[in-house]
Amino acid sequence: MSTPALSILDACDDPELLGRWFRDRSTWAAWFAFLAALFGLPMAPEQQEVYRRHTGREGLPGAPFGECWLACGRRSGKSFTLALIAVFLACFRSYSEFLGPGERGTVMVIAADRRQARVIMRYIRGIIVGTPLLSGMIEGQLRADGLDLNNNVTIEVGTASFRTSRGYAFVAVLADEVAFWPSDTSAEPDYEILDAIRPGMASIPGSVLLCASSPYAKRGALWDAFRTYYGSDDPGVLVWRAETRSMNPTIPEDVISRAMARDAASASAEYLAEFRSDVAAFLSREAVEAVITTGCRERPRIAGVRYSAFTDPSGGSSDSMTLAIGHAETDGSGREIAILDAVREIAAPFSPQDAVGELAQLLKLYGISEVTGDRYGGDWPTEAFRKQGIIYKTSDRTKSQLYVDFLPVLNSGCVELLDFTSSYRSALQLGASHRTGRTRFD
Image 1: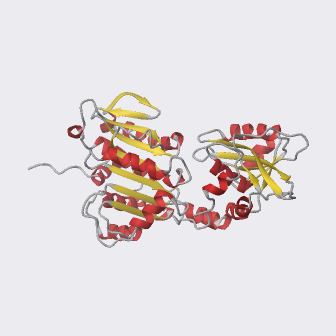
Image 2: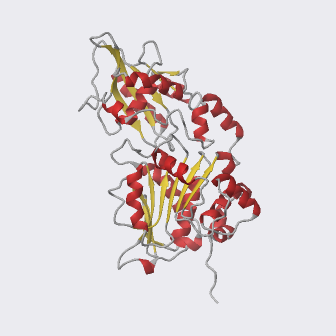
Image 3: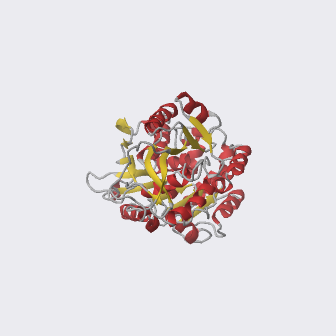
């Protein structure tokens, strides 16, 4: 009589295996229900209730899913859960019979950029290295972007590109924050990247495509999967939608309440897992391309011109910190034109103080002594910029209001953007910079 295979919930129950990573198991109850659903495991009555609430389904799964979409609020625990699944699939299963000579099964972690993908990779490395029964599986040296196991499985960080996703035998693909990948406005949209991945999973039975993100606009692959499969009893694709506190009750309610008071539309997406209607079709590709100055990536300072700036601060651990600089001119017909002169993005992780110093240098290059930004981080941005000789002013508009104000300006052609890969993103930066001071563009 053969011994039943160890399930992921068995591994999470065992303190010598994955169980050591759950300090308070009661706070992970909803995630255990998700894992039971994903792997087609028996569910207790209370888990069945959680499953139905977050999937919109009635029938219980009879088998594991090969594809899953998690639309969950920020800080809900989805990144750690993805890492947990990756470790289980990489360490507790054998794929040798499905691999060719010299071929390795791959668990690929993909995000909008490699820095963000390394957040999950750090979880994965920490779980394996910190579990004595698993750490002995590591072959060779640990790398910043991956590790090799002695069962012919490699776990590594990849890029969101359909070109670099080919040629692998995928054990699992973890697509993090997929709602913020390039969408159909990009040369490499999220659909094409995921379509390039799927053939690499076809030869590995039990391989899993896991796409996780806090929701954003009603467009792109996450939205398409949600509207197609949420509430559907499709046996191959699971969609799980949950607000932050439903999955992680340790997040204080007042954190979400304050965020809702600042910007309800943004917080509803960030914490309540609601897709945003206000940015669903905010900018069209055609409208953006029509106002790009071809070949111009940055405009030099012009003597006598008054420049203004807007920044979107970040603490440096996960989100980028950005800055847009521009000025206003009047064209031959008397229309005021908002002109984008420079954009900077400092991708996480970074030192907040160093980032402020770098942006302050750019502000001074354009003769700017004050910058407008949102209410992020309390007094931190004000003090950090003050030390650099820059006054930080808090915008009296939410981001949603700024975007709505900017849309007619863009569509009327009263904008000149820079020409670089993220022109679509630069339009959003310009929208945040527009109408924040003494002139129409600030």
